[in-house]
Image (cartoon, rainbow over all chains, first blue to last red; front, side, top):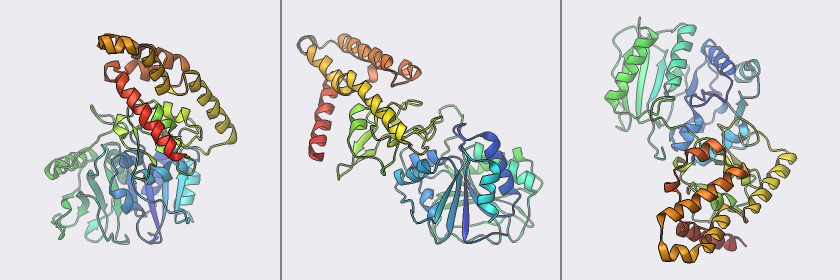
Length: 112
Length: 288
């Protein structure tokens, strides 16, 4: 069931259509049927704009974090802009739903 | 949107004392909640406990085998509502969540709703930014500012004009992203050498306007200075801004649809533009 060493975060990009709908639907579907615990946010950009305190909570702790969202460069600096340092040591991995297939994303998220 | 208030957090609890939700129902519920602007966490018995809960309001949904428990945050910082979803349709669960949100008095920026704010604002890549202040100099709407160390930063993202990526186009280092933009590198795609070369060309285009937009406005303003100071005519100031807008439109840096929606009356005055140009020049001098 859940792998406590690996936290999963999924961004819905709900305020925009820049992430292909098919990809984000399929990734969410696979997460929902995986039996894993995971975290979903409506839109990371919107949270960053609000300097949402929960952004810090999403990255804190000893667990590795895998984020299914968009371009890694954008995600890294979205967190930074919200005042949340983004670890460079590889404990956070950003998976790009704008570019990669759902299969690739899911494999990286849960099929380790 | 600039405050740090957290909207509501929904927890889909499927641990002890609850029945599991069918995966297809789980998907439909989660997708619906996310599309309404909620954050959702699926929590089972195996979930790692959170030391701190950043959300100020939480709704816990579950198919509870007994009555939905009352949960209280002993620290008093988080308000929590629980709802039993046994036998409820997705629509009914959404209604329950909305009702709970209202009872918790929690804010919601709902995607697509009337008055919803689209998260359109610049994001700075500090691995690339050289603190040249071009963006600060260029932006007419005070989106940018500097911190105590004179480091450029995005300070007023609400001021940014939706769908306008103009500042990223004048950035010589391709350091400004708009994650909601459709194409790279403005959307955050990796920057290639040809992108840097292309952006440099765009800066040259702005230099045709007189160094930057503020310089252009300033030059125009100085030419008309005597007339302005004598007459202080709002109409003439507006005409001046309109002419500048036409020139911006011709440059292609700001999308025409964005320019068309600009309220010229809301643009800074010639005096304000001159003052800002002086401030930016002073900052640039401090940078050496």
